[in-house]
Image 1 (tube, rainbow, N blue to C red):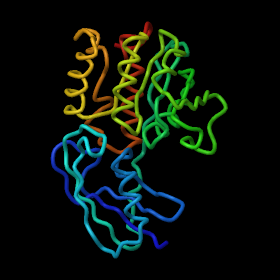
Image 2 (cartoon, rainbow, N blue to C red):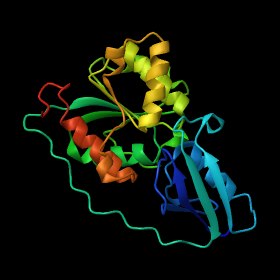
Image 3 (cartoon, rainbow, N blue to C red):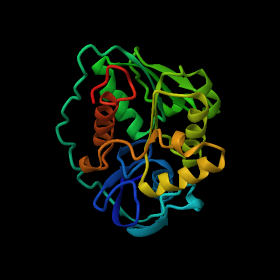
Image 4 (cartoon, helix red, strand yellow):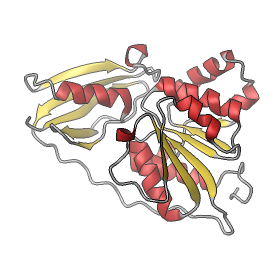
Length: 256
């Protein structure tokens, strides 16, 4: 197939990326990202059906897409390759003095999960376990120091995590995200971070409360994760998340 550029041309409400963000879809490869998850999966499928170009599609990020962001995104599909903006230079996070390796469980091998693992491994600050629903969800090459765990039932896998682990939840499904938050609260953790918008977290808090969790326990989950001021590119979400994790007061010896 010919390359197809998929660009976000408008957003309303909460959305994973801003207008102007683009990716290029080819028969076997994807370059760039418009935010991952169900939105990106649908966009890739639309780009590959062979529909006459150009065209636009407006997608509500609601229950029909398995999401609860509450926003709306308009995508433009056009023939050819749009120049993708190169990532800015990333500053390596600072590991606190006398920091000892901590167990870190990363849930999801999409764009943000991959960026997080790529940046975390060189720090040597974590004993990383990386989990997703199937082996083909992971990149072909994974650092040997990372323990890869394909698990069709993600919440069940939570039972194998140490009680003092940090969890970062980046899956492609809001249903998986919610189930993992529930499982983490029942299992116990040192830190739990969830990718998402304020709207998503407000809905998750209500659902977790309905599952029997106390408000004080739910409040221990950090959402949104990272640093909003850095933007929504996966590399910057990962960098902000690592800085947040390394400074967490929940981990003895962490910076405050």
